[in-house]
Length: 362
Image (cartoon, rainbow, N blue to C red; front, side, top):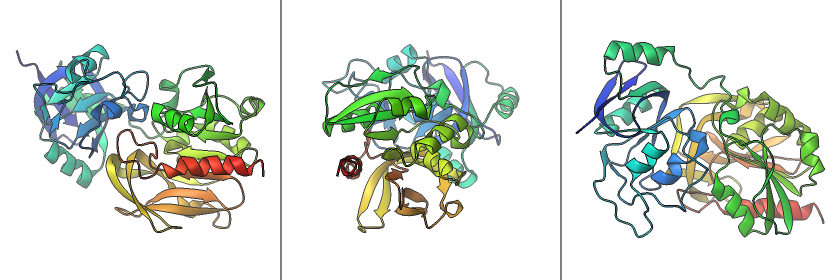
């Protein structure tokens, strides 16, 4: 039996399809992801909290779900939108189907959607509020619900994805790195471990004084969901850490650093979500293909040019993709050097962080 489902955008555009995964109703911001593979990593990326994710690649679920490719303790996105759910699962690592996994975790899935049309609409009109429902199929009632729902601007979603308390990811390594968890992806932690880091994960709510008591060699500010300007406690913490310890920001981490250094952030029209975004390193001229997932960006003209400079730009729209402080041991990137999913072109940035910590002892 096919269970009907609907996706309604706040401007009234509606898509009909069939449900898979969980049943129910969810509101969120509709965005599209251009990755061809890696749906499991995308689903478990905490940065998607508050969002309904549509995959542009037409066939999803063909290699199932395994126990290794998770990027957090559970999925956090609001709903998952695809063109076609694969009827078979073909991978020696697969332990269950995508539909079963979403159902177990309470995530709504909808298939049979014209994802090309949806993506083109979002590109033209911008990311917007939406609702996915298997319960209410009346268009007017759905539109009323989505209009009454909350958008991402002004919302602190970090507190909804982090875990309280300090945890030790691993116990051995030359460098003691404290990771400020704003919704950290596991592969960031794995990449640090590969480079002889002893990783301690602390919640984004921890105060700077308590972080410094841990005597870190470096602090990494992780990726995470929502509006960076709404996470005021974290901005204050990072401001109090500047100049006291080497710092590396990834994605939301770059936005928080920008705000902590006196800058501003703004919402992008439809964000960057995918594993194929070209980014140019302005120092070397090298172009990397990168994995990205963000809807906000730093306004570089709001920062003092004698203190902070752009290091990377996005070749699709020329938005800033990396920056560094000219006097302090601080740098960041807007994309995901840890990939998962995506290419590994930007993995060298973890080495740059290691070099920054080594310089501390020089």
